[in-house]
Amino acid sequence: MQAGKPVLYSYFRSSCSWRVRIALALKGIDYETVPINLIKDGGQQLAIVEYLEETRPIPRLLPQDAQKRAIVRMISDLIASGIQPLQNLSVLKQLGQENQIPWAQKAITSGFTALEKILQSTAGKYCVGDEVSMADVCLVPQVANAERFKVDVSQYPTISHINKALLALDAFQVSHPSRQPDTPAELRT
Image (cartoon, rainbow, N blue to C red; front, side, top):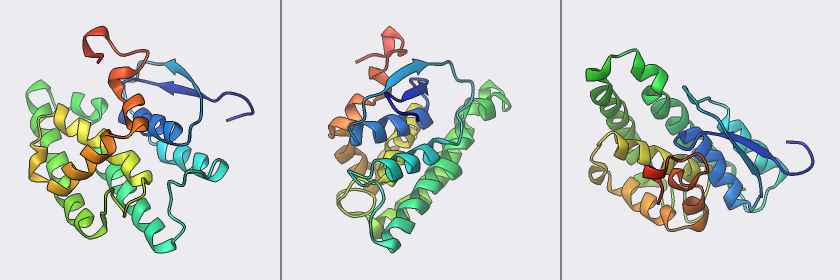
C-alpha cells in the first residue's frame, strides 16, 4: 500500500477478502474497494493483515505476549490454510455438483472439530482471550462458509459463542459480504 487511500481488490463472498475488510475496519483505515469476480480465493490475506499490523499497530491484532501471538498465528493458519482452501470454488468444481456440499461439510467439520478443541483452552470472549485478534478475523468468514454449506455450527459451542460476540462488533458488520458494493441485490441486508 502506497501513501494515500489503499485499494482492496475484493469479491463480496470471498472469505479472504472479508478477512482483510475486517482488519481494515478494526484499524479504522478508509480504503477504496475495487470489486473483482474471483474464481478462486488467494492466500495472501494473512500477509496483508500482518502488513497492516506492522504499519498500523493500533488496535493490535497480534498480542504483545509471544506465546499468545504464536497461538493467534496457529489458529489463523489452521483456518486460512487448513480449512478454508478445501471449500474454494476451484476445488469444488473438480468434484462434480453432487459431491460439492458433502466434501465441503467434511472438510469444515474436520477442521472445526480440531479448532473447537483448541479454542476451549485459548478462548475468553474471543479466540485468544478478550481482545480481538487476527484469529477472530479468520474465524467469522469461516463460520459463514460453514453455514453456507449447511454445517450444524451449534455442535461447536465455543466457535458459536465467539462468532456471535464478534458479529456484534461494528467492524465485523460493516465488512460483512451482504454489505459490499458488488453484493447482488438479493443477498444484501
